Length: 236
Image (tube, one colour):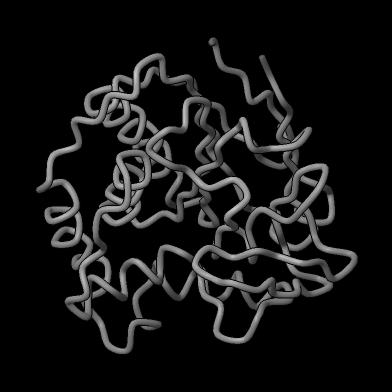
């Protein structure tokens, strides 16, 4: 089966350097062999990215702060990887959630790239990254009432609803990964052309850990201004 992921032209106009790694796969067995120490080690390794104070003085954080200035954001919204690195720096370690999330969080912490995941069986139609033209309800993880997205905000959206806000800053309950997710897509965002080699390495590391710990075989593609869409294909 396959669905399409595409990035609208209005996103490239704001962030022409953006590239997105797209990793898809199907879990035949719901195996979870993620070691308890994986996140512990990742939280420790994350500290190398945030040696300066304040946290905004660190290059990987400042780069995303600059990018977030290019579009409308909710007050206080920062790139998802900044949130993870900040927790590591403050000694508030990122804790286990489920195998799929733990694996991508470990790579995000170690490699300093924002990463997210979608349960493809919960996505209606195709997946798009776009600049919002209207305000919509957004059901954020952990909240009992919907938020309202902003006009001009960059969001991931399927044919029915908003799936994340401010690029990959905040996930919805709609398409989140659980221990029972079988068909999955991960996205890794990079806004710095000088980090392209690290970006590719992060994609490869995520694929390796998914295979090693979850027996999840995946395929990967890169979407950019030259290749603005791809299939979210997986073999059931």
